[in-house]
Amino acid sequence: MRGFIERALKKVPRMDIEQVRQLLYTMAADNERIEAVLDSTTDGLAVCDEDHNLVLYNRSAERLLPFRVGELSEKPIWSAIEDDEISYFLRKSLRDQDKVVDREFTLERGGQSKTVSLSIMPLVSEGRVSGNLVHIEDVTEKRAKESRLRRAESLASLTTLAAGVAHEIKNPLGSISIRIQLIQKAMKGKTSIECDKIERNLDIVNEEIARLNRIVVDFLFAVRPMDTQLVDADLNKLIRELVDFMQYELEYAHVSVVLELESSIPYLLLDERYIKQAVLNLVKNAIAAMHDGGTLTISTERKDDAVLLTVRDSGVGIPEDNLNKIFEPYFTTKETGSGLGLTLVFKIVKEHGAEISVSSREGMGTAFTIQFPVPQKEKRLLEYAARNETS
Ligand SMILES: Nc1ncnc2c1ncn2[C@@H]1O[C@H](COP(=O)(O)OP(=O)(O)O)[C@@H](O)[C@H]1O
Ligand SMILES: [Mg+2]
Image (tube, rainbow, N blue to C red; front, side, top):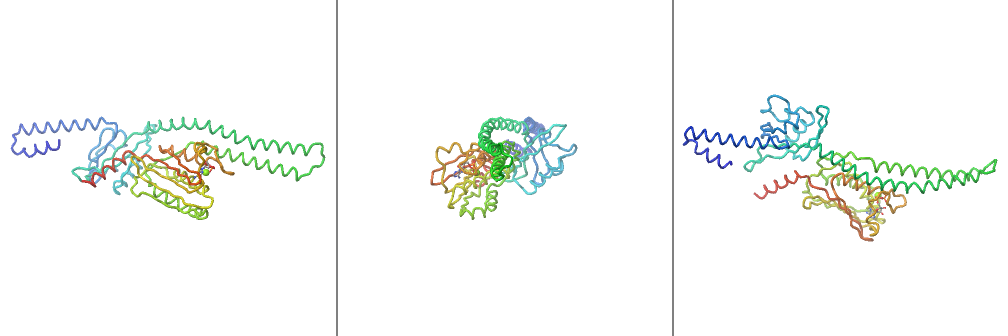
């Protein structure tokens, strides 16, 4: 198409007025066709030039973003947006030349709330960056569907969890009942009673009540819905911070840490608080599995369309019979374990659209691997970078 125009332009000096008119008609028709295509896509597109001025946007962009009415061109795109948060975000990202993938914003309009996802990509023409493309997607329905699915999933696991709680509660209740019977027996037909006998039993009753309370608190923690907010995050940085944070605990347990972090892994969509919690749980289990110390290896690597995070220990390992039970709520082999650590890890992993797997050999050690999906647009950016490197 561009070739055709270039060729035609060269001929313009030799054309008569009718031929020039014909050429303009053709170009106008092409232009209209392109505009029609742009306007009929449901995704919003806005194009800025090198000075971040808004030069083009389609109908969906107008529908999805709160543009100020009036003259839009000749000024930076952020001053054309009425929402402060989005305006600030665009100004910062475009000025700092940040690549942005699926940053989500919630907009309130006419009493309805809408979630839009914004991505910023460099606009390449003739081998050089000539501005930016802002891609806007309405993800309201997608997010609602995801949370409906998650709710259904968590309802199913709730049944298992409830069965677990019932089972857990039986023992302390039995113990309380025995202790009360003993107290009643000690009191029977007596006018004065030996207090120390009763005191001992009451101590046990109190301990059991505390245990029951812990079960209920842990249960609520496990079933509470998560409010994950996924944003672009640097997984390697997160891991370094976590290892720093656990330094003393690791030293105390004589565990040496090996980090094999691939520096070129892309940004991932993570809720850092929750991912830190999940990795922390895995590391704590690893420490507990290495009674006399050992080596903890944490690695990240890119593999096809995923990023793999592996937490490996040189501990006691997991017997094969237990491998399919460890993620179940309340499964523990520890005297004071809650059995909820890996249940929570599993839940967090699922919230991120990721998968977790485990491999273990008794006496050799255990490795947990979380497989994170690489965000779609991140993939496109990487492909673009790779193309430029080779060309
Ligand atoms: N790295 C590991 N090495 C050996 N066993 C493990 C490891 N991680 C988990 N397990 C086993 O899985 C069980 C469940 O783990 P978890 O859900 O974190 O509960 P808890 O740590 O309270 O026991 C543990 O009790 C242990 O038997
Ligand atoms: Mg644990």
